[in-house]
Length: 309
Image 1: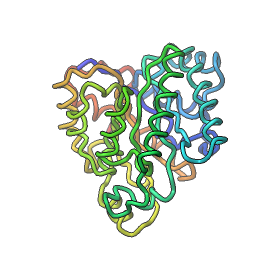
Image 2 (image 1 turned 60 degrees about the horizontal axis):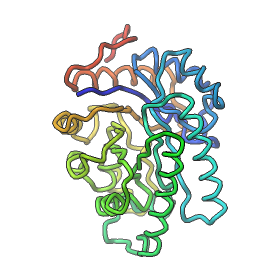
Image 3 (image 1 turned 90 degrees about the horizontal axis):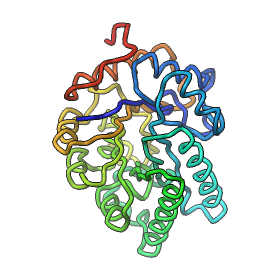
C-alpha cells in the first residue's frame, strides 16, 4: 500500500482562525510534525502558517509536503455566511495550489449546535433532517465548491462530520450518490456518526481519495446523544490503538483496495484545552510508530530518534 503519512494542526488544537491555541506558534507545530517523521501536514486554518508564498516557505523549511486543507461551509446560515465561506474556499484553493499539494481540498458542512447535541440521532430527531429542497441546496453548494476546487487545478473531497447533516450512513450515501465528489474517510467521525469505517471504505472504495485516521472512545458519544448534551470529537479522541475504532481491519481494507494517497493522523484537541505541548508532541511520535507498525511496507521514519512509547 503506497501511502504518505501526515498530521494536521487540529491535533494541536488549531480549529479555525478564531480558535487558535494559546502559546503554540505555527513553526512549533511544523517542527513537531517534521521531527516525528511525518511526510506532510494539512494546512489548518487559513493564515495559520502565513499567506500564500509564506506557506510554501514555511513547509519547505521543515521539509514537509502539503497534504490538503479543510474548509467548512455554513450552508444554511444565510447567504452572507455562505458567501464568506466560499470566498475563504477560493483563498485556500490559491494557497493549496501554490504549495503543489497532492492532497485534496477537503469540504465539509460547518457543525450545527442542535445536531451536535444529538450525534448519531438515527430516527429519533427527524426535525433535524434536511427535506428534499434542503438536500438540493446542499448538493448545489457542494458541486459549486467542487467546481471552484477543480478550476484551481486541485482535487476535491467531502468530509462527513459529526454534528452536521452529513453524519449518518444514509446521509453520506445520499450525498455521494447525488454528486461525483471524492470522500475523505475519517474513521473517528464515521464511527461516532453510526457507521462502520470498514464498511464505509468498502461501500465507496472508488471514491475514497483521502483518509483521516482517528481513534475514539464511542461510549461517551452514545451517552451524549442520549442525554442531548453537546458532543465534540475532541472530547473522545485518543492515541491510535487506544480507542474503539477497528483501525487494524480498516488498514487491511485500504490495502485490499490498493489505496494510494495520504493517511492523515488526527487526534483532535480543543483550542482551550490547556494541553502540555511536550505530551502532545510525544503522542504524535507514538501515533506514527503505531501507524507504521500496522501498514504493509511502511516508509522509513525520518525523524524518530526518541522512544515512541
